[in-house]
Image (cartoon, rainbow, N blue to C red):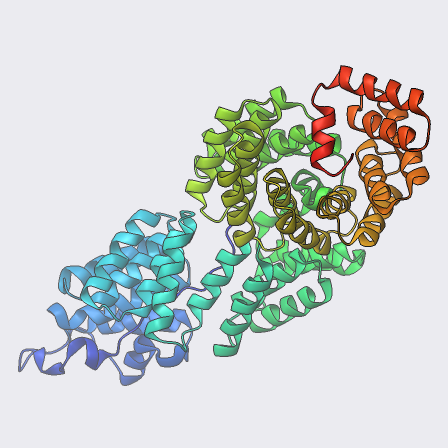
Amino acid sequence: MTRLAMTRAGYRVSALAGALTTAAVVAGTTPAHAVTQQQIAWCENKGSAFSFDLEISGCTAAIESGKWSGKNLAWAFSNRCNAKNEVDNYDGAIADCSQAIQLDHAFANAYLNRGNSYTDGKKDDDRGIADYNEAIRLNPKAKQAYNGRGNAYYHKDDYDRALADYNKAIEIDPRYSRPHEGRGNIYAVRKDNDAAIAEYMEAINLDPKLAHPYLNLGIAYKAKQDLDRAIAAYNSAIQLNPKLASAYYNRGLAYKAKGEATAAAADFADAIRLDPKLADSVKMQDTIEQCTNLGDKVQADIAVGACTTVIQSGKWSGASLAWAFSNRCNNHNAKREYDQAIPDCDQAVQLDPKLANAYSNRANSHYGKRDYDHAMADYSEAIRINPRHANAFNGRGLVYLNGKTDREHAIADFTAAISANPKHANAFANRANAYERNKDYDHAVADYGEAIQLDSKSPNFLNGRCWGRAMLNRDLTAALADCDESLRLRPDDGNTLNSRALVQFKLGALDKAAADYDAAVKLDPKDASSLYVRGVIKQKSGDAAGGDADIAAAKAIKASVADDNAAIGVK
């Protein structure tokens, strides 16, 4: 919905560094306006000791003094450009930096500061990148230019290039804090909140006086539902910058999530006072949260209705509205309303062709309709836009596994999903399924184990490990415990009853196995495997006629049932 906060990295130069020497003034001339040493100090603003208004005033005095001219005057225009960036006067900043460049075409800092104007102020990342490129060409050690270009690539969702630039900035100066914040933002977008927190903490350690890393740290903690740490981080951001409206807004969200309505209301009021544009977000916060529906906290039909309210509100338009259509598409998918989902994702893609989630959600719709070719195309596009899109890799893996019967590519995609998000339980389980189909039960059991560590309440994961252990014919007591827990979580599931019955069969507990097969057949009279093995047990127990009847019924349903079960040790 919004960009994570970025800390701008402008650059100032001193009068002597910019002018080289004051001897450039023609001897005997008189400056148009005398400039004081104090005004020069304001314009240089070393260590950001003065306000930006004073910096602008000092630079204006230097420019109008007549004391410098030509290349020797470029420093003052560039510094005033930087100060105007800080007060959000981006058009004025661009004009000043352009004047500095006209005076000195080789002045790297002026390109850097104008790049900040385009990227941070005008949201024109392509022009920003062009200026950063020139700054880097003129000064290959310009760490701020690498950081700024990284921010521009981040805005364009080109995370690999952004990360490369942040890494280069850190290589140039390992004590430079801002690229750590940028790397944290990339990890946050990729849902790797632990890595994001580590980067924000490093940025804070290197420069504890910056507010934005604390703000983003709070957002990452809130994403982990660590609300107390989130609030503490927002507190620090506000202490450093009492005018940072987004810190009050996000702290209000954290208080609201904790059920502290009074504190939340006070923060929302402060956020609106500082930035009236946040009023609509505050008013619609419940609706926005329902539409976003992180963690599937509300029913899909409620989420669909919330997204409809957002779309019809008129508060968002263009690319800033795409998220609502994409989320409504996703929630239609949850209801298996694929024909309603696809037009919503189409609209999201039209509004924002770079919204990877919209392609991934539309791919889910196509997958639900078993339109595997269109699903494959959309998952691949999502991955092209965001090469670390774990859900898109997981989805494409399912297309390979179930639609294309290409297990090797499926395993590769599930592995990529896990690399992008090591906490993606479904990717582990899906890779386990692919290994299982390859009869690689050792890897299957290991992956189901990883999935269970991440989600111990999934009956599917527990059943998968139960079955894998049965196939290996080892750890059968542990397999039985897995199936028991799966059935506790989801009673009367035919597949799990079949799995547990096989474990009991291999343990020699034929009566218990028969009882589970009985229950499975009752749930699904066409369950050929359960019928067959129940028949085998009847024969072993002396009921030849009953066993023959079950086996005949099983073969009528599935001719290969005897061979299939022989392959898993049922004889």
